[in-house]
Length: 342
Image (cartoon, rainbow, N blue to C red; front, side):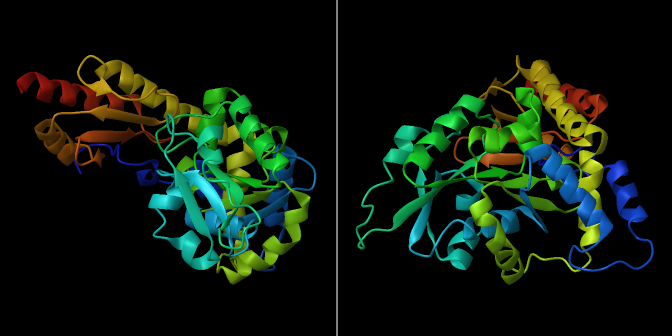
């Protein structure tokens, strides 16, 4: 690797403030499985953000967060409606279907998002034992295409779902980026807009490796203790996971990291918009663009990134808390050299 990576925010390292919190947690003996002061503090901070007595369940990774969350919403004969590009549908190796036993009903997105019309097309045969029963809706915020649901769009989905006795799960692997783009706090994407359960992402926003399931519907809270353990997502040395959450939620580190990542994508889009066709409205830390295949091959060998669609040549460029202005400028300058030379 000769330059900064633009492949994924997972390629970034651990933010120094979070690393310092992990090191500081490595003192003395404390109780295991979350019965420690640091884990208690993490719960307090997330409850202050999301409200009241919400359930807080740290887990190891995003797939684990989604699987455990959906397990708390579904029975095996029930299904979750999601987009065809949803992470749970294409990037989790069938984990939700294998470990929950529930079917995913995927619909084509509009600008990366679920719509009421799309959801309606999948919610039928209710009460008929010959048909899987649609019980939950899963939205991704920000979406896999780097777009963001407005608060009103989420409210419309949750209101529609609750009128039909359905739950709404929010896959928030990049919830901080979405909140920063909307100019709201993460808590505004929870109970205020009717979401029942959130997979709260931290790893992509500077953590070493932790996500948290936020249970906003009190009826679902108690069973999550058991689903998390049975799903092999209960950490014995929980303090090291919780310390990451504490650091992220202290002094708005979550916002500083996410806002910076978003700004770096905007800077990159502005720098190369005259060179390539950018396919998305750059709202968060993702850019989708059409780039000549030869240019992509050379550029990605120097600054790694993903070819998003091998058939069309579309690429995805991601920025992170660690991406610097110098990284962006070097990437843009090299792209300009290659395009002009071609």
